[in-house]
Image (cartoon, one colour):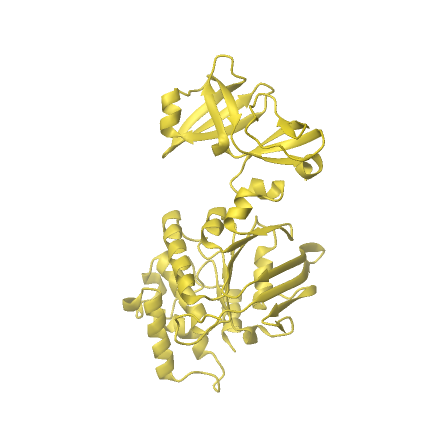
Length: 382
């Protein structure tokens, strides 16, 4: 087992989530979730609101308890373990920093609220504060208050506070959700580099597909309390297991068609580049991402352009097929301009890549709240 660079000796652990069920009243939130997380792995729980991802994270932290199933960490069940004994570091979306405490005091919070017998001496606490301020690249800001920091700096302090208690597992709940796009991107790169240095088993919740695909070693996609797919970012994006995953990750044109001899046929679309599949003839759906649709001007084209708009280096083209079905294409701006693509023009469309599903599958910045403060204190106390 590889130990990280931090001097206080945290080490990665394995997590085995076994058949977790959870209801709130009559509403099922988790419906039999099974998931193994390897030591030192960075795993993203990705899904829409209500998919169960935050509930799953809170069960790992001991802030919620399941109605059935188990959480086994390094061979030990955590279900009966109180929150404060689990040694998890939890980072909340809205920082949950204490406005009346300095940066240094916020970082030390989890250490100072420990029982007297387990509380480090002052020299040890100061050494950890310094080490963590260096780690989050805010060495000179220990004496400032949260209100004097930017959003990105506050989230780094929240992460340092979570690390100060020497957690066995680091849990992050929408850690960048309250930040603007530019800061989120910078912090994603920083967190990925930090994880490589620390090697700490980390689970984070997000509804942002770009964030999950960029950061995670593996992505777990949840939908209505069930896992739709688990895989590396490349696996879930390039080989989606279900229509839901394909729709959720990047979006796609969903086109009804028919399979004949393993080849999909869609009215108004050249599908000859799509690989045949081993399936009987019948109804099917073709999912094609916009960047996999090519559009060429042609007077006899079976589609017409409704609109063309430019965003940066890309041209987004909205089209209507002969049968009235609408779809989107995304081309490089220079290609679209060279072809003279414009509204009202007739074009021929070709799907360069796609994913087929047969009929059954195709159908298918603020102060912490009182509860935040309780959660932080509960996690922080050993």
